[in-house]
Length: 391
Image 1 (cartoon, rainbow, N blue to C red):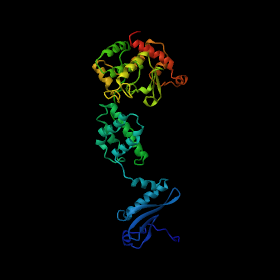
Image 2 (tube, rainbow, N blue to C red):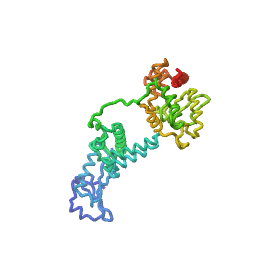
Image 3 (cartoon, rainbow, N blue to C red):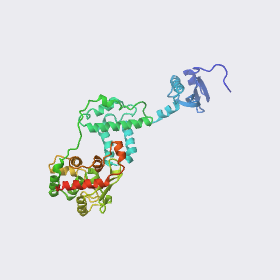
Image 4 (cartoon, helix red, strand yellow):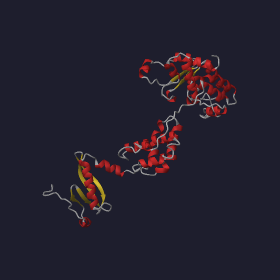
């Protein structure tokens, strides 16, 4: 039966609330009710309209929510509903257990683990946070961490370990993006603006040190007779002659080689640009592979001590150190590129394709719809001839 007369407003009093015992719904006004159950338990209920529909929202039991607190919360939720918000959604978030930053980071790491191709990168992602972030604010609820906490964590390494600090900052940003999307945080990501507060770093070029191309033939002659494992020597010369990246050579498998066609095909999953790359193999490269057959590696062409596993990613670095050569394995790609520019007349697109670089100029990229394989075969043949000191 509909109520007649004026609607109640603050109809209940603390003493009245304590004295009520009959099971009933007692109105205080403005949609707030005290519910007395048959067991005499008492709880608060707000009845209001949310997005055009009537909704009942529990405000807790009388033992933990006083009359004054119930009225204040009811007023707040009514204001939220009137402004177009959703009190029910807010209450659901409030009932969630707020994760710490550490547990949030672990959740993000687990959810992305399957998308990382490199297990080492996956391990470094969480290890860097364990080292530099968790000791500072890992145990704080993810909604309580602020920019000051992030600055405190990054300040010790911002200048001394610039690249590490940059990656840690990116990982912190990812955790807060997840927290915001999951409803654990509101507003902007606290990482925003942090780099502008930290000290400015000097910008230095990060080119890999390269050997002048004129010295490559002499280097290869030294390499052939140097006291190192056969697998390492063969792999490094193969890297130089193919102008490939270190990881591409170390993880090369016999299944990628077409000896009859003189082609090494690297799958898109192993390439930096995520595109399949065909490498034309000069006769010297095929000779190196013939020698590598005696190493007994399966499936890897250049095995480490264990024939079932590839060479260590430190193998080239250690060999170059022992040879007292001030360059990196990756730097031989620069040696090749300088030689191609200064000693040949091959077009830029052919030289860039040999390095598996993506052509940045869209017009030029659209024009070259093939991988220029035959042109690259000529180029790599000339590079192998030059590197052998015959030209």
